[in-house]
Length: 188
Image (tube, rainbow, N blue to C red; front, top):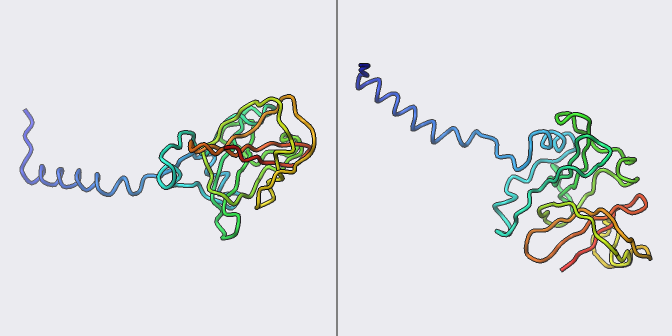
């Protein structure tokens, strides 16, 4: 039988309680994998740590999604908050690589000529990838326009892979790469 002295027990109990109080404060609070956090930091932004806390309780999807670039073995798209202040405080970053821990900005060739970073003005929402059919291009506008007004290119795309940013409140932002330019459509 092992016996523990009162003093040893008191020290052990005190240390255990202190670890419960102080340890969680030092744990990282990442809302996305560390690899994506590293890519964000390398591109002048940070994860949105309060992504699930501050806005809509209906948010179900994460601020990142895997598998956007078909040609890359590993790829992801994610939201982050810019480190510098500005009228477009968020970035949507497209990353790709051959190893899971070596992601970097996707090459424009991997994105049909579209840039790997979109600067954005509105609060980000959870991401998902969809294939949508019969897309009316006139309902989109260039993502660089801060005041969304439809008036994109003419025509209809029979089928296109899109990125949907949705916080569950009925408003979706649909991102489409078309002829080397990012377009967006707000859909209620």
